[in-house]
Amino acid sequence: MQQRFLNGIRYIPTLPNILAKILALLNDPRSSARQLEEIITYDQALSTKVLTIANSAYYGFRHEILTVRRAVVALGYEEIRNICLGASLMGFLHPSTFRDGQQAELLWLHSLAVAEGARLLAEAVSQDMEPEVAFTAGLIHDLGKVILAAFFPEEIDAVLELMESQNLSFRQAETALGVEHTAVGQALCQKWDLPPQLVEAVGKHHELSSELEFPRLTAAVHVADFLARQAVMGHSINPDPPQVQVAALPLLDADEEALESWQRQLSSRREAVIALWQTLLQE
Image (tube, rainbow, N blue to C red; front, side):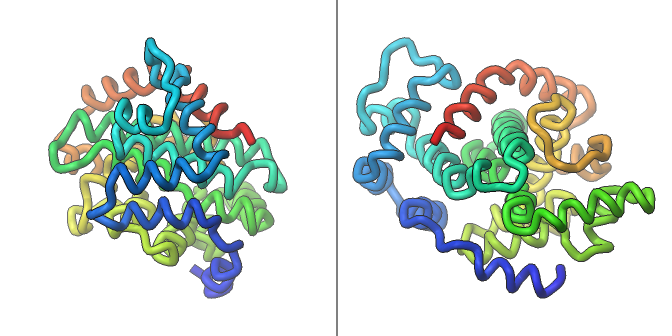
């Protein structure tokens, strides 16, 4: 990636205090539900968002959840942490601040669909992958694209123009211009001091290999990205037809039948994911 983008990342606006605290929890194995509850409780906007989402169609509880403490008990620490992360990230990088707000909205919907897909895969294939970690990895897997669309939209235009003029794939055009979204996302994750498995999933979900440190999680994100694009849930900006890399299914001990089953499962969650997306977008 060209040095100018690494330099540019340094000048991304300072993280809101609430988002910095939530990201710190991701990297602290000693973090607790009590700490998260305290963070939420003292932020009125986040408290409201958490309760709204906890009572949304995405979860479908029969009884209304009226307090943050009850939400944490009902949904669990990791789930509430992911809600807070999603709400804070989408608030910090809200589509209304982008040159192309609709593109940003669809990119966030794609990210939520990949998060949902990655969680489904983690639940289905392995006990060595935590579903909520997979959800987080899916949520931020295209963070580089979000950053490019927010702060360097002309570079997105240049990639798409080069694709068309030279008949290149999206990834080939990114590489030719030195603006790989995976490298941008990985650099930002490192800047934010995120856990190594998340850094790898963001940076390597298009470069699968058994030599990776966390190959199964990264493969789950890659396959979930394919499933979300196949289901046309949001838009990843990449106009190329979605494909699954040859290495992906073996890394997950899965086959084409499993892939088709996951596709059906994710598609069945469409309305719930869209409802969550709409709630998170509300300012």
